[in-house]
Length: 603
Image (cartoon, rainbow, N blue to C red; front, side):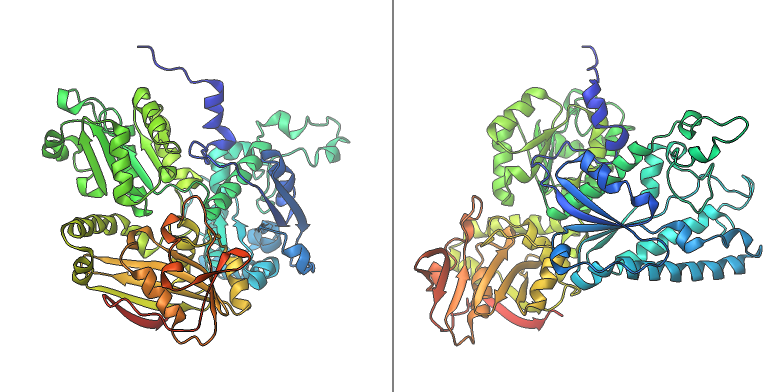
């Protein structure tokens, strides 16, 4: 069979400005956003290029050179922005002093400290909306010059090399950004490197501190020469537009991740000619070097991100289990996979069983399979499930770099997700062997409810993840941003979280509830905790001690069947004229006896 040809359209999707941000896993169209760009000349084209990349995005630009104070922005205008982009002009903080410094490590160390102080001052000015409103903010790093100006033979990692000096500044900007709530560093230098620095950066012509892109911006000033030069872009292969497109796609991908659009929770892999080359049972295994090793490495990284792994393969299970270590040569363990179905049944049936066991939906699942017939059958049997596998050379980038597989931050629960789910499977096996009441008594279930008071709480990251990812037990399906949570706290609303464990495992933070005065505005519960009475324990804590009529919101969605009885089974009745609001007379709620409940302060 002839190798498949690479179509121009496919090539364009995986190269150039799109290289860092694959869209193979994107299903939901990007709804766009309104954003503000504050910074120097490098940032000026960003709103226009952003709209060219995706017309659903609309941006405004504020020139902020030197240490200008961010102009006053009305509350109404500020509330319209979904995020802001902050660019720090390198010339503003470096000036012309760097190349006049005394030639000593000490002088350069001292100058670095002074420059870091300037960076911190600039960020304080430019990030006022983040400080006051917790507005989502993307802070751009600096592009690192292409060569050591003192020569190839000089010490590379010395502050007297402007390359390393700028690298250290990038480290500082990244750290300063990480200290702030709802702010993220954008590695502009890597974006430039991806396009090719020789095509993007102007440090081969202009000053090192200019820090922007190759362009013909000053060509008019040279037309009076005896022999006027041709424009810059006649002398160099400039790709400044491609650079800005890649930069905006990077930011839009980060925004998409924060919005939790089309989030991947489970990656399922076939084995022969997918996880490895060749057919193991037929003795035609190829070498693991190359894309198979890269793919295996990718799966382990996804596991660390909290994405579950599974195997669905038409194969002899006994043979695969017995020969696993020989085949994969230690790169993966079978225990790295939360579930596997290795048999000769239809793959869609096996996948459906795994999804039921893990309490996941096809829409949050990706299947990797080399066989186009199998891929088509899986999609037909499980609509909404995404499939990959026709192009092995794209797998690593697509799975690691797509917005849909990333997390703004990794929590303790993320790294242990596989072990938690495996414990859940063992727990479910015990459940099936005992009457439900007796099973609950044997669980030794312990839970702690804590009130979260600020977005800086240690529990906030996981609570936000739960609020934005949970679908099945989510009473309103409302999604949250750090900015919105900050505003709710400022208005006096309360957020409670629940942490649980049983004799099988620690489940971490599995529940959250928003309270607005005497109304339970939203309750979410992780799917791995459903059916254990933990939602009842959380509700009883929210109601006990209240001496006024309590209300609860419940907005039915396509996915939240699991939570719909929560209010009716605890004595709530619908409010006349409002099918989404329930009420209950002031009275305590009996706490489930099989749950040992403690109360703590969540900070």
